[in-house]
Length: 111
Image (cartoon, rainbow, N blue to C red; front, side):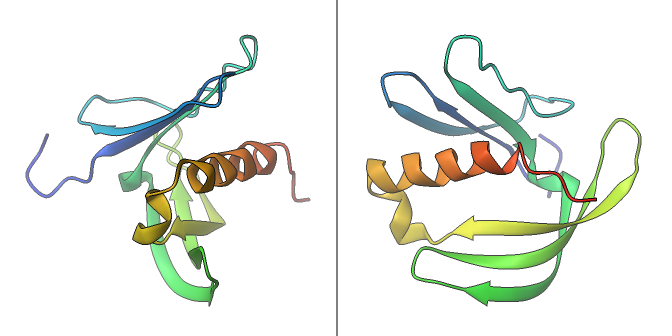
């Protein structure tokens, strides 16, 4: 991985409810949602998003306005970025809830 580069983060949720999360220097070009086998895999590089300003904070996470840059087209979009608090990553049920929410959010479109 390049000096100062942020890692790619990948979460996998399988039909069994097992959650795996890890960072890897491997390069991926975009989201990969494998719904055919009832699993969700989101591969996303933190380098693709720039945090702009805090929007809010709750018990589980903080939300920021951000700018997403598509790595393939270099198009930019204003996005909301939800970041789980570190203490929320300790319980499997909280991780599952967060990833379930992320899966739902991939289906929402904004005109």
